[in-house]
Image (tube, rainbow, N blue to C red):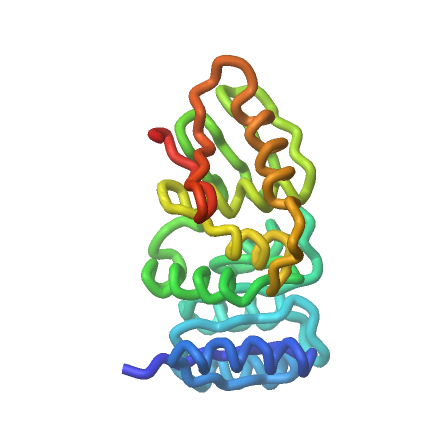
Length: 229
């Protein structure tokens, strides 16, 4: 069965980028350029998921979200926003969104999150994932806090994004290409050792002392976060 996606985004370039990405992955896409039009589509159509911009003309994204939920529509909704602070993420989740992705973003991550929401089912079927874990390493996505064995680990923003990517793919190899696209937003190989430098710093921070090694190198491919080598 063909799946339909609703993209509510006022920036034409972003809307076109997202729509083409979904179409290339077999979806039928409706695009709305403002909040009121987005609400009309959301309440009138049947969608597998809705991608909703946070700041929209005509009607704010959170207002659209509230109206959709008030109408009893439980379609999975992911909010896109340039407002990436913890407070804004919490607002989005409390307003009824199923996920919240800060701009700029890689389409591959948006697609993965939308597909995960569809596997999870209608809104409310499961709680929104706000923590990631590997052994005694914990990441709180809302508080932007990382701990291991209860001890706080201070990470730079790029290190946090890198660790989040590894945690979301725990037990699976994360390729260098995936890291360049999703952490640095590079769609080409810059020919530098930027990944190796950040991995080295991250490894030192999460494996300090006699802690169990969690970050493993898969030679020639990439890296993997796992409790076992």
